Amino acid sequence: MFNRSQSEYLICYHGPKLMVDRYGFNVELLVQKPLSMHGSSEVHTGYIYRRTEEAKKSTKCTTTTFDVPCDPLFANAWKICRSGLEEVCDHTAFEVAKHIAAKPRRVTRSRKVAELQ
Image (cartoon, rainbow, N blue to C red; front, side, top):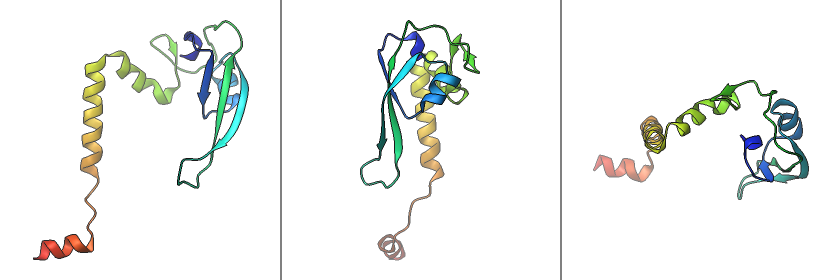
């Protein structure tokens, strides 16, 4: 999708081997920086790339959903987005409801005492 855009820069958490060799992006690495979220001890690496030449249609990506090179992980999300805003809203509402229903409420001591009274 980046190769079809007009954006000059790409910022992501994927390294050059994946971005160039597997996805076929026409980019050069500008910055590689270790990053962590506030309050988290987990460290990830962020990458900033710049487009190197006129974008060409990638032949290296393994999935071409809707004639657009796309990682199989994101193929379903891309399909939903292409279906329109109403489809995205319906899918989002369904996923939120599914996750809310799946998590039981945490019972604290104060809630237990209140329920016993």
